[in-house]
Length: 255
Image 1 (tube, rainbow, N blue to C red):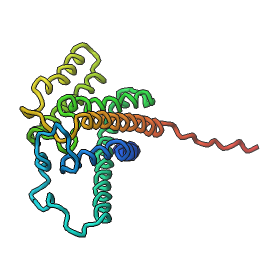
Image 2: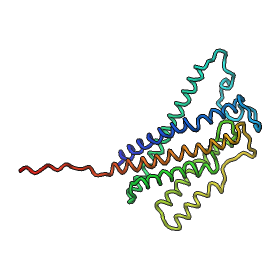
Image 3: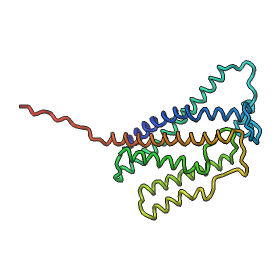
């Protein structure tokens, strides 16, 4: 059983991760590159309230923000961009394989409790993951482009993790404890992090146009929805395939 959980999670995560990588390359990466032009000052938005290059900490090495040395050609820029995309896409695969392993373990519990491995249930599993990991924390901390100031990173990480855990527990209550008390507890878990409130700045400011930031949020959620839906469907197909009985050939009677 442990090997089945691992194998199904691995393959489902790789399938979903491959699609997410493609969608991010087509939909969200161009917006990130455009936002970085506003952050660096190559483009200027009329409503920018902060100086270019001071909204994000790119590390202790100040040389990273220095102008390129004479002779830095397009080949070096192309290599740097390719390396950046490769790292980002590798991270996507790692993340979705990790989610796939977690979802596979939870699906094994659901199957042990009598749930069917239908594609319909698989889609519901994926949508539950999307709500827990993307929608619930995104209500307080939406996806952000470069050039947008934000509250303290550690505070945001703590709030994000607590919100995801609370939302995942709520999804479990909705799935396995189908009574008024379980539903009420699930709703309370969903609401609690937002009643506490996500870490926010007192003032909002940014260099990128609001329309670009809004487009990035919409595309990020669309990519995540596609990834989680495919993860759930792949998981259901893999578990259902593993559960199918293998036909045993019956030798013909010798007469």
